[in-house]
Length: 516
Image (cartoon, rainbow, N blue to C red; front, side, top):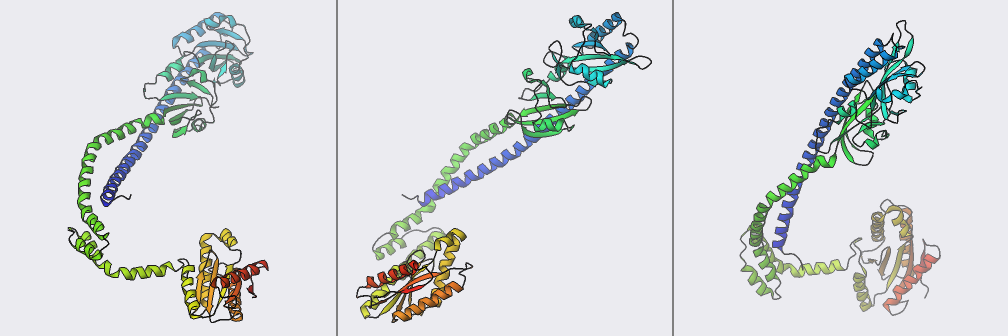
């Protein structure tokens, strides 16, 4: 059952309204999404830059404290009590370090905080100590595990005597997995919206993360980390190492080479958009329902005249149908125009039927007759006793044309073949497309030899001329003649097909006459 006009009008209106609303909602979503993403990226960039600045101030202050102590101890490295007092003072003064130690030029611990006093006199061979002894300049080490088993970074400053001799260094450690001044600085993250913060060193190794178990993990394959370790600052949308879509802002801290990354999951950022969209839909629903009822009523008024016209036209009695159509109240222009058209259409109905019959006997692709149209001519010749020849044609290797050039080009070749047949035939000849690439030429009052000559001429023209841009097309042909092939009409067509089959068997691109 097909939908009526009322349903079509209603459906079209509803679909249009839905499409317009959906388009507006989607456009609003895109604008708000882009704005939220841009704002979040900028907010995270600014926050990361602020923390990078604060971290830089913290590290610079810590280095200055170490530098002061190094100058103070330049002439006191052989006074254990002085070293111990200075270490204790530095540890307690600002609480910037978890531990403080003085290391000699040969790597022996001369003094350290009370917690690790048992290590005094021990040679330390940690990565941080080796780096400090080798560099002999202020240094912030890479993260490493100390001899006490703590993951930390080491801030060191060389100690030189008054005459410039290198005496060792003083170092302060900052724990990465335990409470420390750095943890306190970076942990003051006031956002409650799913945002998070992490810090990497210049090699992409985590030195701060809310998940302390991940500290020490290398995340260099994260594009944001790769950028910040090159000293860049900025913001971008990126999938983190766990595949979570993040909006990240990042900033480099130049003193240490560390990178600060502030990030927020994209889905949390976009949650307000979804809530807003559903709110808009809820508020718009009552008005939309009222709108649909109004459209339904209007659709009924519009469809009524057309429905009456359609019902009355179906009546089998033309006179009654015309009377009923005349009584329809067509209150708008299109309905009135349709009413007049229906009234005038009855007078031209027979003419259209005749044209339809003509079209029913014609091949739509080539304009040649089809088998039904051919049968009509054959019956007339048979009734009048008119002899005729049949040329059965087939395009050689037509499947190869379709495979090589495509079906549209194959259709062009078929049309070109039909045009060539028309050029090589008389007005009285009947030309037919009998199958996909198969054709018939019916030549009245023509003998077998003359028909073979026509077929040969057509074969030569086909081989010499590209058909709609496709060269190398050849045809095979079989020729038969009625009534020499027998009184039955079917016999001449079978004979032509047999001759065509023989032409194919003999190598194609040739004409074969049926031998009775």
